[in-house]
Length: 328
Image (tube, rainbow, N blue to C red; front, top):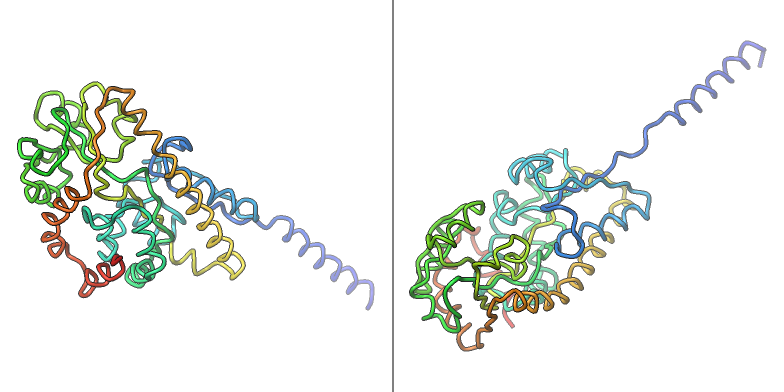
């Protein structure tokens, strides 16, 4: 090789080395939260934190975005489906817009507890069935994260120990579906936006709401909410959705890291939920009377609600599949 060729070769090698040094690091994985990061009071934060820590320990950088930073539920869903957002702690209803199979998670009294739902999702294959519907639309449901303990009945008037106690309560409703649920229980509902709930409860526009035990403590409602029935109505959950384009674009090694990170988040979230019994004691200390439903009364609520299950717009065969997966 003459001197000119040697010089050219050295220049090429040097240029290649410079490119190698200048190459950008892997982009940070964006995680959209549904609340401020709060490892004490927010179950989704617990899930996201342990997920992110496992990724970071394996060389995959992450960045959190608190609620609203990337838009509302519709915007986050759109970004994830287009590959612009990697991970989102999303409303179950948002994922249900892609395929409604997941919406059965929201059926009142369908699941006995969180473990019952987990069994249907993991052991009985319903998570795979959900993803068969949503992955062609650009998202994947990586897991279901629990916000806290299952939702119960809060109200300002009296202890609810049986379904007949609901007859003179007007409950705050999210939508027409929830109004139909209240009607089935012999009660009435009125749609109130969350921002208007305190005023509605204090003026008698509404007498109560359905929510996880932590809610009146988080939002300062303990001065007017006086009763809680731990009815275990619906697991308080969020869908952990990821961009399918991003997920499929990972190497096999990276995908395993992500899957393992999801299991870390899942395990930490479930362990955190076990400690939510302490929230009940906090409700009592705040002056809220806590009541539990007997198994017989809970069965009455479920029997009254069950005729509504068929009204949920699920894909053909999905309700039967959920019933089979939930069978004891």
